[in-house]
Image 1 (cartoon, each protein chain N blue to C red):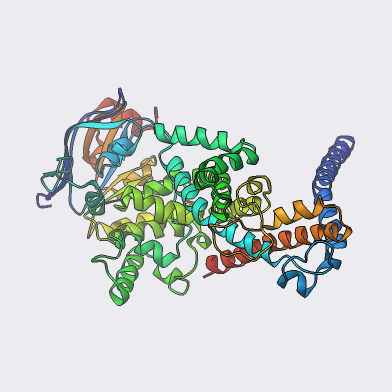
Image 2 (image 1 turned 180 degrees about the vertical axis):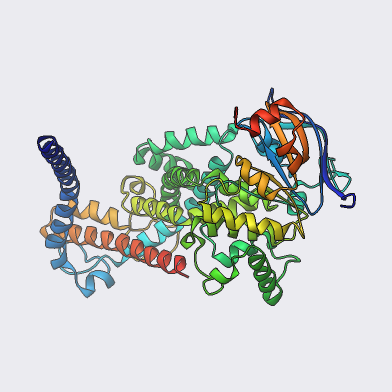
Length: 280
Length: 258
């Protein structure tokens, strides 16, 4: 009796130990990246870094304000385009799962999800840049939006699928029309999940470099017109990291750190907003 | 007892799922201000039958019917009838409590009063009074009056089911359909719901599906026995449980099958 109990306890502890090990292994690269970023990037952070334009080649100092503002504009516009489409399409696919349109949408979304982001960039280039004959922030946003749509669509759909059918029936039995049931009951119930999925998509595309290379292109100046080439943090990281100067390398680290901080602040803000609304 | 007024009746009602017949040609009538119990073994079609009475059956995969269902003499399947409006007159409570988790207790009860969006619905004081009245009728008011803004998920299972009952009766339907309303509740919660039915039938007509024969015997005025999609026998509850006419009914209520 005692033997068997000891064996069970040992086996349980071994399993728990393995799981803890897996968690540590999963977290380790993340922590290493963060620590590395802070060590190599924090020293370059200064007031100038956030407020000044890049210094001309060969001069020291300067900042990346153009890239920070550019990322905010490009990702913001991409979210305005991509999130509503992705969320509404996800709701449709989840609420009418057996319709042919939902099947096609799901298939296209899966294909798009697996498409390398640079291909999406090429598409945006051919679609907007080539026809307008100039690079623009708008083209970059369109490329990012195209990347967001399938991600948001699928997470929204998965979240809504988790809503038990009995909840829909309860609303329908109260005399709710189908569309109000979807919006007022089903979407309201899954709102935290949809917001989380959207944030994840925003964070993912905020770091995308490839689709911006031949759409938004990058710029040395503080640009706010969406019809002109615009800087973005990932592009700055790319240019500085592959450049020949020591200071550029340091700035690349700092720009990457700023990018991560922006995503972090965004997630934190949404998390606080969600908590506040759910505790009304 | 004076001859009771018929509130809802079915005329040779057949309910199908695609090609499968779940309910075969059932003609039945339900008098107002009574509790009617539908009994029978699992899969006998009693729940499907219940769901034809508020047109929820047609929302199921492949659900369709033949025959007629009359509410106060009017066919609810007539082309000009709006199913959404009908469901506001024929409310329904389900087996598992289904409070809307993202809404407060108050908003749950008010949900049925707000189906039309903002147009023509109650507001402010009138809305508050309607919610309070429904919660009092569902015997839940005293337990939740100080926490109306809280989530319904903090309530016990029995309280959640009474909340669903309050939500159903708030828009003042004419008929209430109960689909095994106490199947997921403990004995205490079950007793609360059963006691409520005596008060609720003063105002509403109640049709209840139940697996629990004692429950049917305790709370209902009439009982109908379903078996394999067919209505075998229907009558006053006391007679059904003491002197059933059909052999199958007797076999079922004495526990020989089902």
